[in-house]
Image (cartoon, rainbow, N blue to C red; front, side):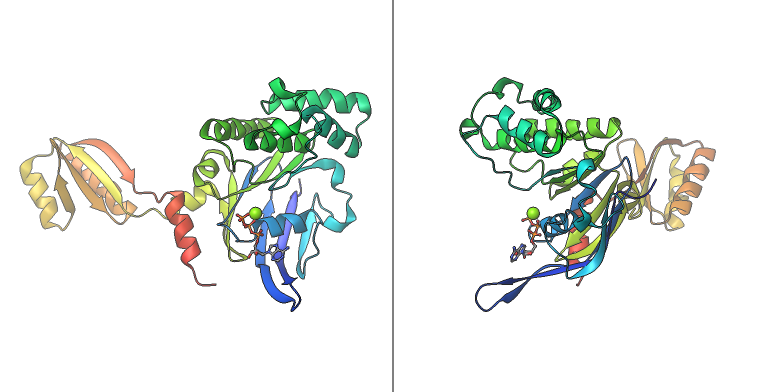
Length: 309
Ligand SMILES: Nc1ncnc2c1ncn2[C@@H]1O[C@H](COP(=O)(O)OP(=O)(O)OP(=O)(O)O)[C@@H](O)[C@H]1O
Ligand SMILES: [Mg+2]
């Protein structure tokens, strides 16, 4: 199946104030979203996430670049039925109830009244607002408004969800619930694209990511590949190695640290580490652990942002 979102060379500069001073929203953003995946759009404040999302949905016109959503240009609006969108700061008319707002979005998306009413209730329950269906939004907390935004995105039964910072403003329990909701959307065969700067959420949910900063895509690819390609050294932990054998390895230049009845040998190269592990076992040592040092997403993220633009 074809990619659900394609963005290539997207650039947008806003003009602000009387002097129409330039404010760069995006310089060179590129990535694609495949069917059935959870895609994380990762970047610090001001990176250009919301600007890109708005362009993907035809809400702003790009200065440059090629954008496609569900295979068509954003301006065509032919994608509308298949996409659920939750904006960064969902604001609703506060005298309406949660149920009324979500029903209204359902009607706007083309559902008939019966379907809009039943799906609205189902989705509000799904996002954890079943207890507040008929309360006015005026009395909702920030987290409840965020969840209402999610319910409005879900009401039309879309195959692609575009969520701008769905976890921001939620407490840890709320974030966990939304993470689980996102995973369950994927289980149903939907595709989820969401932006965030919260790294643990990305690590727990995303198949692929794009890391953007200052309007430029710094990295894009499978999260697992990004996490493993930057392996830095391998520890081999051996127990019961004879003293003489240990000396022999040290003389060969292997960096060996004695531990509690075991020793830790560190290698830069995985083949050297494998050869050592095999030889040590042949000498009667017991292999306790073979441990590549992986960078976590945070250090990869910080390093990506350090690249010059
Ligand atoms: N309507 C606008 N007018 C002028 N400048 C804008 C406008 N929208 C965005 N920008 C600028 O574009 C840059 C990127 O903003 P954007 O909102 O896309 O960032 P973001 O990655 O979504 O950040 P955040 O994590 O804070 O939501 C910022 O420097 C911002 O000031
Ligand atoms: Mg934003």
